Length: 451
Image (cartoon, rainbow, N blue to C red):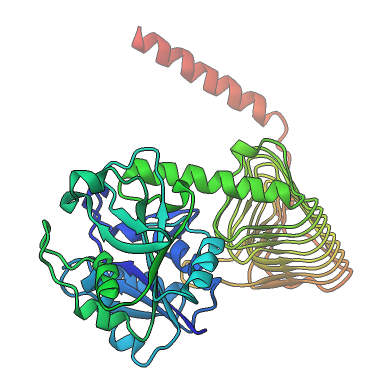
């Protein structure tokens, strides 16, 4: 059965107190709507549609950056969830199978739950996700008769008897694609809000003799993000899940609660993560690598058995091969570091290629930026870069070459050569004593004047 995905992301989200559209706020360094899309992707949908409204251009830009193939449609007026789904009519023209409808501010729906809904859809025209909350509060209620879902009643439109129902609407729908928009055409806005409710398609379907049912999930999956407090709670939940997954997959977390993951962090088996490590987007760490305390990684790859940190920063484009050592207060950006190479102390390596088993001394800097353009530095295999060497790019250091400590290297160094790029030392006899005497004299006179 073909599957199609609609994610509704048109709401304004006024309770966020933000100039940004609500669905662009992030959990795990990914926009809220991206989590819903990721859950739906487990169904391998043929068509993926994002419905935008408030801040539509911003949301469209973010969505197309994440996935250039996604279809983005605009709900020009916010007239309810049913009206929002109807905005996807043209994008789903001729579709068969099942349309799943998710919300862009509900990031924790599990793929397993959607799979249960897909199974139920084989026997029913409409499937709704339900849950039983600790406090039903103002949720819409699912009115069931046996296994049949009769209708969904919004709290503000419910009778006292209906409000006593504890099975609530989780918001997610799976609907026969061939009848979805016919059902929506049967929905009106005769309700307390004057909106076209998506939930009303259940009653429309039942009136036409079509079957509907509900699949349930834990309350935690249906959590929506509407406020900054809920956003913070959502981040806490997300991090707890990622930490548990890492531990279950054979990763050692020395102090799990201090490690922060992104939505796409990948850690290999037997990797060791020390306290206070932050993984930004796009990080892969291979097996047996060690990320030491207070390191920050984003957009990078760490090879097997590599050691990073403590207090290291890996920026986008950092590619560390196997058994590389990146030490304390080292920053790597857009650089490829070969097998067994070492950058151990207080160094910056950007826009560079470092050969296998090269050793960069403390304070090495690749001077890659001239104020307008970035330039590349290449260091050959087994080269030795002396401490406090400034490598002024573009420059090539040959295999097995060496630079003397404190050098400023502006020209290529052939393989096996030693380069010295510093001024000749000159000693001035007694000058230090004379200077201190003069300075101390000036200091005393200044103190007398201030008294």
